[in-house]
Amino acid sequence: MKPVVAVVGRPNVGKSTFFNKVAGRRISIIEDTPGVTRDRIYVDAEWCGRDFTLIDTGGIEPGSDDVILEQMKAQAELAIDMADVIVFMVNVKDGMTAADKDVAAMLQKCGTPVILVANKVDNPGDPPMEIYEFYNLGIGDPWPVSSVHGLGVGDLLDEIVQYFPEDNENSDESDVIHVAIVGKPNAGKSSLVNQILGENRVIVSDIAGTTRDAIDTFYERDGKKYMLIDTAGMRKRGRINENVERYSVSRSLNAIDRADVCLIMIDAAEGITEQDTKIAGYVHEAGKASIVVVNKWDLVEKETNTMKNFKIKVKEGFNFMMYAPSVFISAVTGQRVDSLFEMMDKVVEQNTKRISTGILNDVLGEAVSAVQPPSDKGKRLKIYYTTQADIKPPTFVLFVNDAKLAHYSYVRYIENQFRARFGFEGTPIKFIIREKGKKK
Image 1: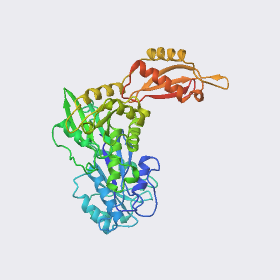
Image 2: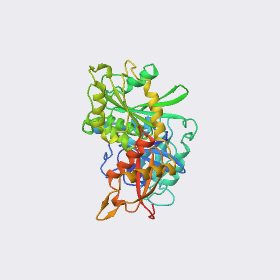
Image 3: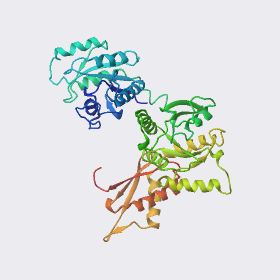
Image 4: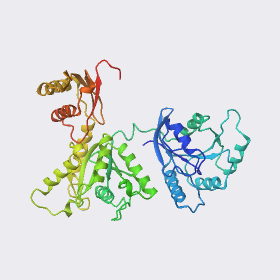
């Protein structure tokens, strides 16, 4: 898992400017009005060969009675809890304030490495005398930087990287399958984790939104290792009223990004909803292996073809991911839960499958011979050859004479031929259209 760096401080000290400078693009909204950044904003960054996640937080006003500022404080505290390194930013031009002291007192108790950064030192050379008063915060040496001009930012990043935990990404977790369990609130995600583990490791409640964070739990079965990631339920955007819930959704999306396979939980009693479709769409766009898990099947009254008809509804609701298999379970009783693991292993294998170029082009040739490529104004699409460029998801490059002639429907036809021949169950397939002879 990538190290997390949280940038905290009172409003209007330049946190978002620093965030954008490190990110390399304007992500956070920058205004002189305090409190513009109300939620944490995440971005993946890299320095000296180390990848990390940077979080920009709303300003902390410890003594404020303002409701929004209180929520911003809660947001920042949540970011602090998950951080490996905290960048505590102050503003040299304003000098040390009472709010700075209150934030420093809070950070001294957190137990996480804290780097004090004195921002808005805009002139090169020796730092101004005003910087020395920040020693009174008891955090350590202040690092002078100018987020606007980039002065001192590189040296600061060198210091931040020193606090990262050892990079064991390719050792201990190389054989661990990361499983993100995603879905609407109260779909039974935590109940499924508890059923698998055989213990109440995760809080289960009928109150939607009990799980605020993405919780990782290690599990070993038949010699295979899994990391189960129970995520907060993702509501419709219009229903995300609390800042804490916005944070939960961000963590859920982050869990999908780092997963090898996603279990998309559906409440059988409610059926397929618009929000289910949006969640599945994010999994699809992220290129993840996926399984549609229809939970609470024990509560559904059964008639002839009940399961068959529900599978049809799943295909209709998720028509963009027809490749995803469906499993009907009861997380409470354990019905069919064991079958999930065999299917997870299978779809992860399909998501990482490689096909040799020779076999690929044989299948492509047969497909083109059976159905001629489309033409436009007398010019016909020619597909010269294909090769597999990547996995997770399987990605293929089609070399053609004119990319504009490669209509979506014909590419989908090629995809269907590849699926018929090679399987790829449970995984999306990505195609890149490239004109032969043109540079990438």
